[in-house]
Amino acid sequence: MNKLDAQRQKEIQQAEELLFAGPQALRFAKGRFQGHFVSDWVMPYPRIPAAQQIELNDALTELRKFLDEHLDPAEIDRQADIPRSVIDGLGRTGVLGMTAPKEYGGRGFSQMANCKVLEEIGSRCASTSVFVNAHHSIGIRALLLFGTHEQKQKWLPKLVTGEQLGAFALTEKEAGSDAANVQMQARPSEDGSHFILNGEKRYITNAAIAHELTVMARTPVPGSDKTAVTAFLVTPDMAGFEMLEERMPKMGIRGTATGRFALRDVKVPKENVLGPLGKGLKVALTVLDFGRTTFGACCTGAAKTCLELAIQHANTRKQFNKTLGNLRRLGILSRSSAGANDA
Image 1 (cartoon, rainbow, N blue to C red):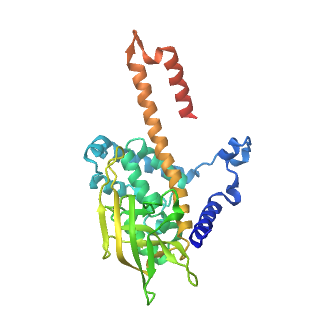
Image 2: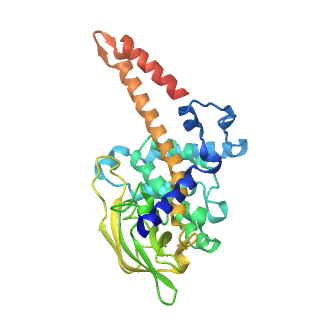
Image 3: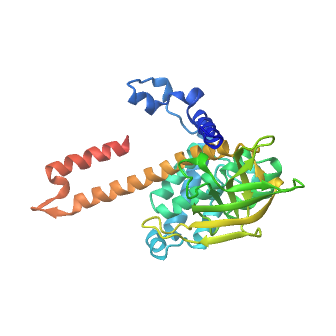
């Protein structure tokens, strides 16, 4: 095994340890697959504290009113764009900074409360829910988790209101699910004041509309010929930032600005290093873990809408002088699906 393969193997091992070690070694779903059921893993079912539930209910009421009046999912899909007025409205309702601390202008909600918000948006428009996820759940999440106080003070106030937007740039030609295979390079300057970044990123949601991107790149490991992934805060106004494709064509979720960009000798100040040098893989995987929960909430919302539409169709569409819901097999399927949805 050569040095590059050995290094990559070590980084993969670190990722596996982060995701599967310690208390997470045997999760509930994994245990069920292995024939184990331990009620302590899931019971009592987690609940939002009463005080925050009241605040969440108020937030959801405000959000629903805004979405009813201003969100047109079909138009977003036709135009392949989310109107700026919708983004501004999501900022005013607090959606774009739900879990950010109040001291930076956020709502200070828990991850569970944020999932309720994303479920509501996901039940209406996939594009809008993915946009919010890309901005908040992964775009500024690294800053929330790993940023210094100075970095948070500088970036968060405008990001949580939607005045500025965030993105998370991990995916490359050879890196995506294989997060350890990032190839973008970040070389330190001779005076140590900045890093020089070179490489390309693709399939980055919000890339063309973001004001701040969390970018993963490889930095040299001091005292060796190895490199490790480091997270950087990059802005599109930096010299050498080139947008190669503002909106990559997609079959679905057409409203999101999924883009491809290149960094050509982009000078990023050392103050923009996010988290410890060489620990970007941990930053990336931790952020993605948070994102998975809210993306799942969006899908739950979409699934509930699909079920409601299916039941409505089954109860109104007639064949053989009966509604589809009264045809025995479809009726059973409809009722069992509704029961699963309630559960």
